[in-house]
Image (cartoon, rainbow, N blue to C red):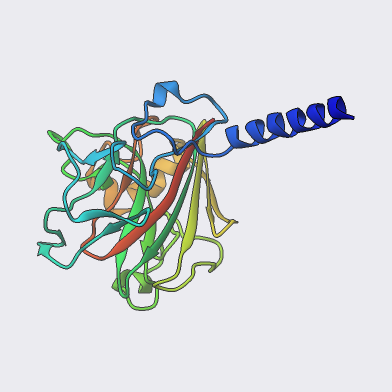
Length: 247
């Protein structure tokens, strides 16, 4: 009987260990993309520090980005032009090629922000991440001016494509965006519903870009590997449970 009990406990321990490996690893403060194994979820925000991020084109993250109770909050109470004073867009230290990215976010009343990917960090050519990296919009659709424009609403692939249905919760409530980019196939899910699918880098994609504001930047939407970015658009925004899986 004792042997049977021991074997049962051992099986439970092994099962628990295997289950924990499938979840995002929150134990590390810093992340090296080259060490991430395909299929392994890794937390880009561990609720403790911003060691996996830096301000675009700079070193450390500005003081307006604050970790509060495990949630990253951009305090936009002080402005610097259209962004926050001592804020600015932040990007991951590492670049990603084929990935599954999950981000939970909530936006302030009338607020605007964004989640970008395939950002190419070269400040000699590009002043902001959105000049190279496509963006899925974060916004208060009801009161933000962008909420009145097609292809500018929350969840949209900004200025390129609209989501297929309205599933975004209002300002002050948590939403979840998932971006799956794999060998040129792009899917976007909002609150666990697939709302947008397209193919990157083909002729149709080039036509989308040519018809958008991004046509001014020849490198926009052309990079097949790049950083993840969280935008400072001068509004309070909160992010949590940011995790990524290499495909």
